[in-house]
Structure formats: C-alpha cells, structure tokens
Image (cartoon, rainbow, N blue to C red; front, side, top):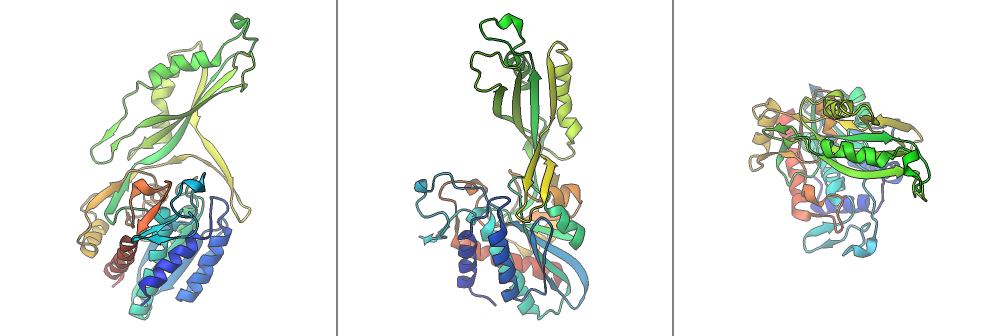
Length: 383
C-alpha cells in the first residue's frame, strides 16, 4: 500500500503544473507517467487529451469509473495568496494551491486508491476500475467525458468534486442564456433617428428579471443570474447602440430542457412585437491541447438519484459516517448521470466554497480520508 506522504507529494506535483482549460498537456503527461509507476494495466489518451488509467480484475464484473478533471481556473493576482499558488505548500495541516480543492486533491486520492486496490486484491476481483483525468471541465462540464463514456461504458461513476466527504446524489445543472436586442444606430445628438437597443433591453429586462424561478424540493431553485451586459458599438463615442446582449447563468433542475427554459423568456419577447430581439443558449469554443477544437452549447443538465437507489445505499455502507447531500455547482456528472443515464455519486475532499478562490486549499486530513473512502467504495462495489 502507498504511504500518505506519496499521496501528498503526488498532489503537490500536480499543483506545480498549471493546467488551464486547453493547456493541460504538461499535467496530462505527468499523470501518464504516474499511472505507469502505480501499475495501471492500461493508459489511454483520447482525442481531447483526457487521460484514463485502467485496472482489470481476473473475472467478469462491473465497470467502475472514478472521474476528476485536471484543468483549473487561473490565478489573477498571485500577490494576494498567502503561499505561491503553484507550489502546494503545506502549512498548519492545510495544503494550499490552485486546484487543491478543484480538484487535483481528489484526483490524487483516486489514483492512489485505485493502485492500492490492485495491490490489495492482487487483481483477484470481478470487474474493472478506471480513473479518468478529464480536460476542459471548467468551460464545458461533461463535454470531454462523452469520449470516456463511449469507450469505457461504465456501470457506475464516482465524481471526485469537493463534497466535504459527504455523498452527493445530485446537482443542479447549468445553462448560459443569451438575450439580444437589435436597434438602429445613429448619432446620439439625434437619437430620434435611430432605435436604441439598450432601451429595448431595459424594457424586456424588467419582465425577465421578475420571472419566478422554478423550485425543486431537494435541489432548490432554478435561479437565473444576470452575469454580463454589453452594447455595440462599444465604446459608444456619440453613437446610439445598435445591439445589446445580456448573458444569464441559469441553474437547472431535473427534467428541464433547452426549450423549456427559453420558453418563458420567449413569451415575454412575443408580448413586445415592436422590439427586435432573440433568446438562445450560448455556444462556446475551445481548442484542446491536442489541437482538437470543441464547439458546444453551454447547457449542462441536472441529475438526482433517489436516496434508496442501490448505488446510494452501497455508498452509505462503504462510507457510514458520510451523510447524503447534493452539489450546488455543476460537474461532469451532468454528462455521466443526466445525459448518459449512468448511476453516479459525488465524493471528494475539501469544500465546494473553496473552489476558484484566493488561498484555495484542502485539509491534509480530508485528502487522506478521501483516499480511504475511495478504497472502501471500490471494496463494496467490486468485491
């Protein structure tokens, strides 16, 4: 079995390799080498650049996938950090660094736990264990995971996003909604000669922002938050704007679709035929470090397992001190559970609230507990 020091050192090494979305090549290469050293039976890098390590038993059985993304958000001002965000400093029982919580800590624990399971069983078990180290999650939750599902075809997925070591059985999804108004540009000294797109937007926004969010008894409200607004041309320079675009972050509830979340806004637009406007789901693009281009809608659905689901009950047996809960943010499970229909739970060290923050950290103790927790989950799911 591997030592606690090996786990901490692995996490530190991952932190020392910055890996913004689309630039994960260095850390992906390091992970491949680590998987070889840990004795994984198979290592595969897909077209997007995600790395999956596999361990196979000597009998037929379920396919278990443990997933963690290797990309992180950036660091805008390192001077604000107590410690260098790319050194993985341990101070007072806390491991600091970009990605410790989101989610190189969990990924390190998964890799070590999978290797421990192979050593513990000597390969004498039914089924297979796979650890996917996915790319581009910070931009497109679950998109790169589609290639992994297609190849591995898992029966069960464990997502390692921060859960404070609780068992997550669901999450709200996420969508970006774009509302645009169109007018007619003219010199601002004679505004009557044009149509001000910002004025049109203000008319619509008064009603859009008054929409009541839907409610789910477990996951809460499907809130919609205005995140940016911009007119064109910008800057205006004595010109009446000819267009205005607003982006909303909409949190999704189970069963919601692209059309169902756009409908209430479209109904408002229909009430104002004199205003030229459109509403749609935002699309984004990204070039992976492999050179492959991603172009996808920013719609990532919600999911929820019932508390009596067999996977949830097995997780409770494997993790008796871990209560049931759900994520407030979006994860790769939007694909695994909501899109692909694969039973999925979340379990990982650290707190959701520490993701993307200055002085991001994970406690060393939770990191070590997560490794034990992953090993216990594998014991209960495969033996």
